[in-house]
Structure formats: structure tokens, C-alpha cells
Image (cartoon, rainbow, N blue to C red; front, side):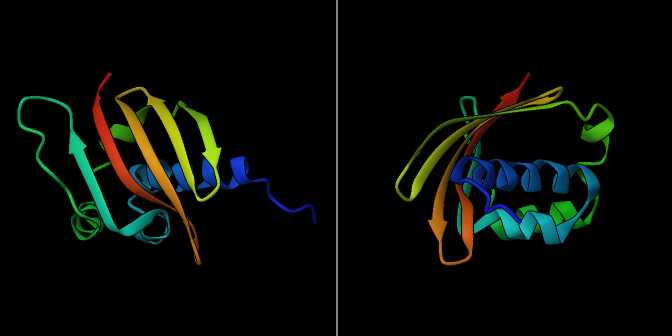
Length: 116
């Protein structure tokens, strides 16, 4: 079996994050997120979500309605050494993700999102 490229591995992490959210799949969400994740919503009050809160929301099925339209466009902007930048466009969100390579693979460390 062919080894996955870095861009493919980064894309898989972004898909674990989005599809895990849509499906309420805590295992996929957990696999995608760095333990020190900081997720913010664009606006005057940025707020902040942690990995633990994202896992709780995922387990509660909070993303199920968002997944009614499953179209996703994952654009890997750049992979440079142990960091990567990704833009994900979905029917309901636009997210800018920063990933870091860890001993357990690529993990999302930062996410900034807004509605589409």
C-alpha cells in the first residue's frame, strides 16, 4: 500500500474534524484535535472553545444539523516542516486551520471560523 503524502495526511485530519462533527463521531474529532486546541469564532467577541468542549459538543450531536449538506472543499494552503495551513469551505462554515505535526500525526492547533 502506498504511503500517504503530507498533504493527504493534513487533508485527512481536516476531514476527521468536519465529518466527525457532522456525524457526532468523537473518535474522529479526538484524533483531529491537538490537546491545546484554541478554536475561535470571527466577530467582535472571539470566544474560545477547547478540545474538551469540542468533544462534548460532538458527543451531544451538536453538528448533525450542520451536516445536512455534506459538501466540503479542503484547500491545503501550505505544508512547511511540522506546520500546515488549511482552508475548509462547507455549506455552513469557512474555517482557517493551523495544524502541527506531532508524534501521533497531524493535529489541529488553531481554528478560526465564521458562517458562510
